Amino acid sequence: MKKLNLNFSHGLLVMGIVALLFYMKSCQSDAKYNSEVQKVLEYKEDIKTYIAKDGTIVNYNNNLRTELDAFMEATKDSMRLFLENIKIPKPDVITVYKDRFYIDSIPQVGLNITDCDFDTTFQIIDKYYEITGRVTDEALTLKSIMIPNTTTLVIGDMKDKWWKSKQYVATVTHSNPNISTEGISSFTFEEKQSRWSVGPYLGYGFYYDPWKGNVGHGVNGGVAINYRLIGWKKK
Image (tube, rainbow, N blue to C red; front, side):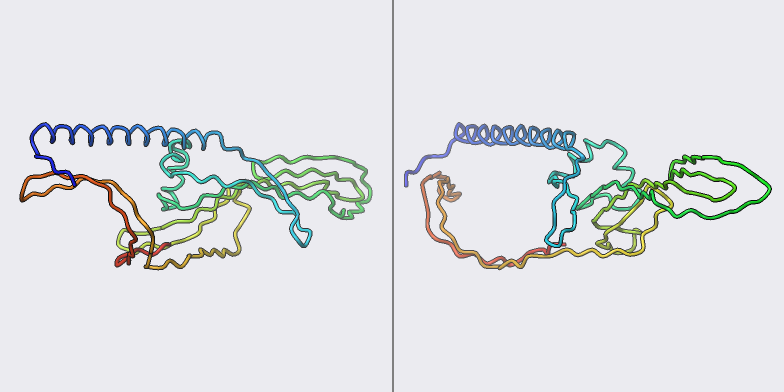
């Protein structure tokens, strides 16, 4: 390997190269961040369907993989305040879906009111429900009942009190107070990862000998066997 004498100009050159690499990395990071924000803003709340094997109609939409910071930037303060309220500031998954409970075939109820003759249609419109119907001296008929709702599913670490340990939870909230959750089941499946890894490597690098003050460079390669001593489990 070729050896070079280390001097002040070499140090300036190395510092300049390092500064340039950091600058390029910063520019790439900013561009990626802006791209992620734009992806969230352009995400469509579509409803697609396919038929399951048993004939069931399945509703779905493409899941958007993005960064939490970009998502928070795109949704502004509304989502941040919501997540702070449910005590999960850094969620892993957020799913929002809108549904509507609707019935348009309801059996009428007989009234048979005597000595009175009337026929009235009615419509009750509320933020959380809509009811239309007809009432006469003979019967009460409900033509339709509609209940809208938006459900938000959030999965992440929740800490109820500062002195308590975190819990990995799945939370469900409804926009309609007339809707209640009767049960929640949530499962996260972990992939088993080996601590061993084997593979070839090839690289080009510089070295510095602090005892002789020399700098060297060259190409090196080979096959490496690695064993991971320390690791963290996935949630």
